[in-house]
Each structure stands twice: as structure tokens, then as C-alpha cells.
Image (cartoon, rainbow, N blue to C red):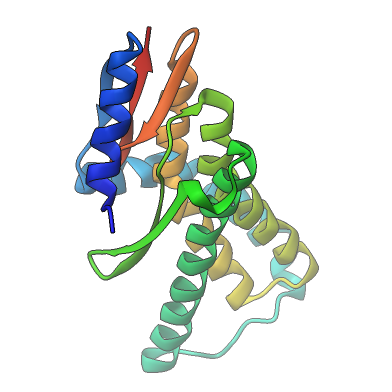
Length: 196
């Protein structure tokens, strides 16, 4: 079975034959995590302040600490990450018009990941990149207003922070000009932009 790197090299070769040239827009995983926090932080702070001043009086605050707190927090992260990656896949499958053929799920550094195996137009790529931020991020905001509490607050923070690198990538994609095709990089966070 063809691996993602081989598929990526085939896409590059085909696009080069069609007269495209490439621009590498990737960063290291460490930089993606750090930068992603800064991109997500404004959303988490604003919603956190709204929670503190408007919702904390009716919040269901759990009296948890120590091991119980970490178990709840790890469970929220595990569930959120799986749904987050699934939403990337759903977004790219729907926006590409090619279904699940363009989506690859895999494990990277013991974490589930999703990648797009096709070069997509800018808006289609953005749809998949931003799907978790829109659905989980704003879904968490909706949930926190319906049921404020410890679990909903932690879930909201996790969902916004985990979408931070996606926001950074989306901001870079939005800066791309004209007719551009975007292909997920097979190893690094980010993408390769293809221009004629």
C-alpha cells in the first residue's frame, strides 16, 4: 500500500509537470504547538472571562482534585482529539467532492492525526482545516452557556487550544494569493502551496 509520503511526491511531480511551482509553508511540531497556543488564547480568554462573570454563579463545579482531576482532564483531551481529527477528515472529504479517498488517518507521536492526500483549492482546504475549530470550539461555547461547569469549561479550553495550530495554518492559507492549490505536508505541520 502506498504511504502518504509516496502519494505526496506523486502529487508534487504531477503538479510540476502541469507547470506549477511550490512554496513550502511548514514549521516544526514544537513551533506549531507554541504558536498555536497564542492563536487560540484570545478565544479562550474571552470565553473564560464571560464564563467567570456571567456563568460561574450557576455553574456545576466539581469538587475534584489530585488523580480524579487528571483522569477527567485526560478523558476530555482523548475524546476531543479523536473528534477533532475526525472533523478534519469530514471537512476535507466533503469539501474536496472526492469523499474519504482524500483522507488519511494515522498515528503520529502516539496521537491520532488526519491528513489530506490531495491538493485542494484554497477554500476546500480551509474548510477541512477549520472544521474542528468551528464545530468543537463554538460547540463548546454553546455547551458552556447551556451547562456551565468544570467539565464544560475544561472541554472549551481544550478544544480552543487544540485548534490553535489549525488557526495559524488557516491564517497562512488566507495570505496565499490567486489560483493556488494547497497540499498537506506528509511529515510537518503546514502545507505546500502550488502556484502556476
